[in-house]
Amino acid sequence: MVALLGTQDSPTRGWSRHPPNIDPPDWPPEYEPSVQTDHGNKAIRRLLETGTGATVSFHVAASLVLLAAVAVADWLTGLEYSFASMYLVPVVAAAWFVGPAFARLLSASSAAVWFSLNFEAEKGSSLGVTMWNIGIRLALYLFVAMLVGAARGLLEAERRRSLIDDLTGMLNSRAFNEVMTRELERMRRTSRPLSVAYIDLDDFKNMNDRFGHAAGDEALRSFARRAMQTIRKLDAMARLGGDEFAILMPETDRDGAAAAVARFRDCMQAIHDAPIGFSMGVITCDDLGGVSADAILQRADTLMYTAKRLGKNRYVHARFSEAVGVLPPPPPKAAD
Image (cartoon, one colour):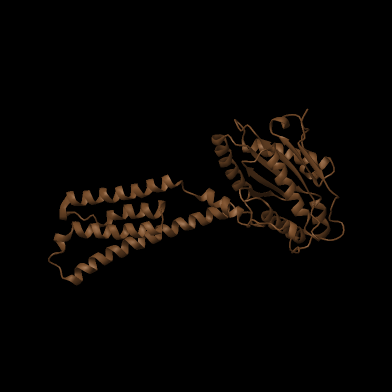
């Protein structure tokens, strides 16, 4: 028999009287959140990271090796062959894989190396011509480095937009799955637990029908803004679609998840004039061997519908292993 590790209910707060306050008043002092609202940005930065410090060091070393290889080839071929454009190879690598500062440094180094290897050819030229030749190559290297850095920036900006929910500014379902998959891999390596909460706003369809979709969108934004102020620094929260949200709680066991969820509910329900009730399903995974992100979300979703059948505006908490094939399947989405 499945063990429900935690349930909680409170007076139902619906949409019958008025739409939710668009800008709820400040928190009561006892609920004042101490964390910032950049959890989603931190999660996105983790997704956009190209690698660890060791990986960056590798790219720095690889760029320097490329510069050395071009310099050796330039020296071996003598003055008959021009290798000036080949110095762009390490510059491009540095701009793409390391960053603009190192790319500028490597541009200057490339120009200096080219000049030192072609000094004999410049002996017969005036100082002005020599400075022009060095300057034009340095400007070319810096310009290419700038273009490559800008292209990399545009690519990252586009990827960032693909990870953000347009309405709430939270992570979207795609980004949440990526973050969750990474955290599962990390938790497996460290043998630490992980918990996930699946949230669905109660009677949200009725609110849309009664007050219109514009009011519904404002309610979602208000809920998302307050929720992001409430979760812990190590957590990640996303809007999965419609009125469904999820919170990822890494390194969080059963007791830690119960405390975090209780605090989340207390803080959210302490908002004056914001009658947003919600049901939650919470899954804790103590053993992550062979567990996928989709399986965890599916069972958290099942627990969330169990909370709705128990009366809504509450949460149901279980271990992943205890929720396997025991709880009844969730009702159709239209039955919200």
